[in-house]
Length: 166
Image (cartoon, rainbow, N blue to C red; front, side, top):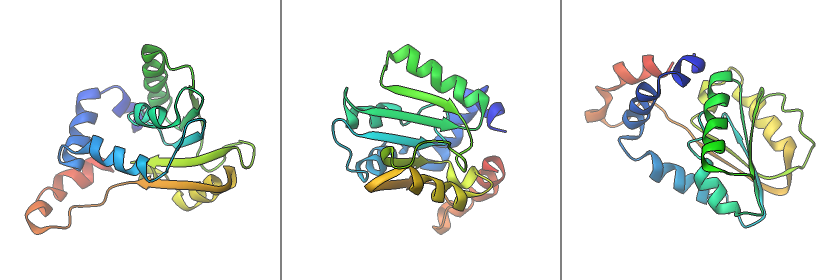
């Protein structure tokens, strides 16, 4: 399904605009801030999609830090790699993989970030367990995800948003 989304940029952007009510970047900024990243840190993004969070994460780790995005969808990995090439980010890597079996050395990241991805994974609990295994002692995890609208006036959108997001 995410390979389909990767080929339909406008539809994907519209879904996120609807899910975040136009405040996507603000939510991404605040959730990245919760990681308390510093210059030289390394951060792994689970389910990086097209790389929507890379700029913010990269800004926070600086030139000496490292951002690694992993996604299961070949299409999303392709879009994320194109973004990295286009921006000239030499400290951002993108790999295709399963978040539940990263194959990464234990304790190799300062932080793990998951934005709009855990609810799309078949086994989010396994992904979180794997994320903890790659964190250094004192590492942090931040999750940004969505749920159906809770406030009455917005709940009318759930009949549209929920089926599309699934």
